[in-house]
Amino acid sequence: MTSIRGAVPTDLFRMSLCNLDPLVENYDMEFYFDYLIRWPEMFLVAEDTQGRIVGYSKFPLPFFQPLSPPHFQTNQLTLALKVMGKVEEDPDYMSFLPNYLPWHGHVTALTVAPCARRQGLAKTLTAALERACDERGAWFMDLFVREGNAAVDMYRGMGYSVYRRVVDYYSDDPTGRKKGGEDAFDMRKPLSRDVARKYVRENGEEFRVSPEELYGG
Image (cartoon, rainbow, N blue to C red; front, top):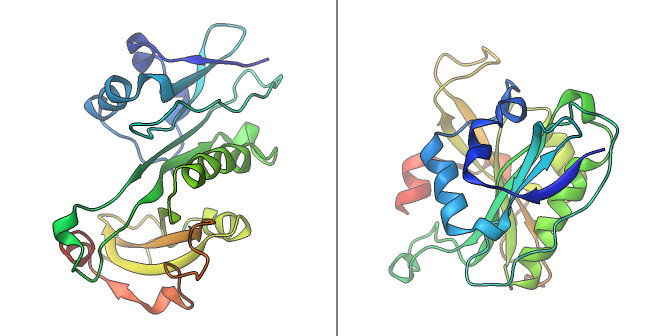
């Protein structure tokens, strides 16, 4: 059985089991400490009966009430899962730029260990984040995923669609299809506020932007 509790600083040194997946984008210690300091009530860890940190989830939603975390039990002692997300928007001075991002939810990272897949855990955790962002008035959810990642189909099944292709967003291409970096799909899922579906588009795979355009307008 796995229990969910609030994280403490020393947990950051015990999360290797959660990150040993070749498709997981890992972050430096400063990144995790920043989340823990700024949103401690929304940084949760999963601990098994042997006291191992086997999963964690972070829902940094500033200025609002903390979420009620999803609860589940499992007999898989090696369960490893995480979801990291936030709600944000670009500064007002960028509102005239074509790639301006309004108030929206962002899935920073989502992973479930191979031994725990096909149990609906990814959908459960993502749905919890989506509900929280919807309650906070976000227009849509978005995430970035490698073009060659099989998770693209999973996200499509969860209601996400490709909004644009970010060329060479990743510095490497594990698929070997390109000599340079791998493209990213910026995938979005409209939330209830976007009644007119203003922030999604069809055939987004053909809408190409560079990383510079993405962050510079």
